[in-house]
Figure: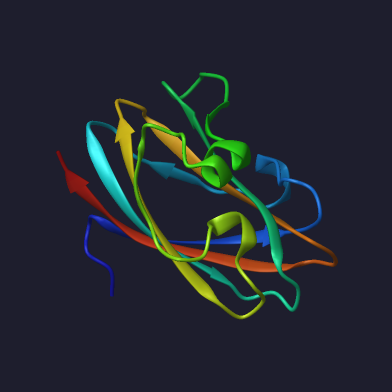
Length: 130
């Protein structure tokens, strides 16, 4: 059982970034938080992309918050920690970890991309007040 600040999101991933209509689920963030993420690639193929989008209110538009390029280059100011394997290169059947600063967004979604085929990427984490 998860506490109020813990979450688990299952994303149906393909070779393209998912849209909200193809499996990306929204996480209600709602404030100045840090998010501790465990990203588990449950697919039979490696991941080759991962980005995080946010929107500022319920009727707002989604926009890129942390992109695959920023993760790979290590230049996103809102990434607090990355474990050894980058989320965008998580091998099949493996996990990686990432801590991010959520700033003042209202909603966030996690968008994984696979090198080939389809599969599931599980994102588990917790929200920590800053």
